[in-house]
Length: 283
Ligand SMILES: [Zn+2]
Image (cartoon, rainbow, N blue to C red; front, top):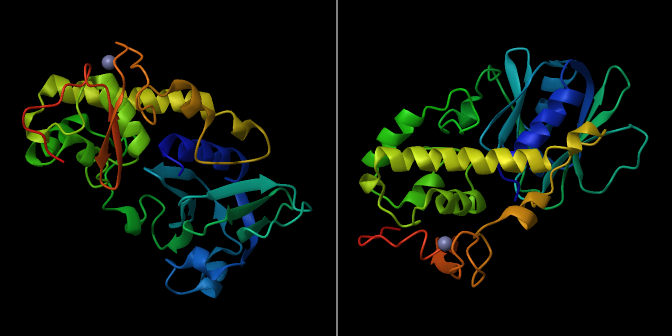
């Protein structure tokens, strides 16, 4: 599943290859891809034909391209890709939406094998589309406010990992980045949020930013080619993970075997030495 750094890489690719261009036509090839566009596929196509795409923005794992006052909003789901390429290349059976442009240049294909991703047009959503207005800013956005997050974390009686995954508190942090950031900050995933000190929260926010920035640096090269791609598991994960998916392997800092705990039908990975379990744990 693409996480924030992969989605940011796609956003940069769109900014480079698509913004400033006028759409000629839109073809919805699978209605499920526009299921959140409640007026239906024909309306989606008509709403975008002839429009110019002016900017590419992102909040958490959502992307949007502005079209006048409106927004073309996208979520890549589990397997979604936005591919830019020459219009005469073969059409894969997984292409769900095809955008062609008035300049007859490269087209844009929303490709999604599992069809969990979707697109919709959000009226008057150029600045912030209404369907995602309830989502908190992510740490890479200018609107992100660490002090406000600290206040809300302490007011929320939950475990810190659960809080990190709560998109109404902070967006864009998935399971992998939560475990990696908590390890870097030396915090156990079940630490009750109301017991976190100011310096601990600052350390955690800095760690989230660090893992995002490193992942962007490692995975942010594909947009140079005429191909915008996201495949969920960037090379960053193979090389740089300290604890995620590494049960029983030595912690890179102290050598203690990494522990895996069940967490929300998934797992939480941590180092028992660097991230001591709190006396009162909450998950
Ligand atoms: Zn350790």
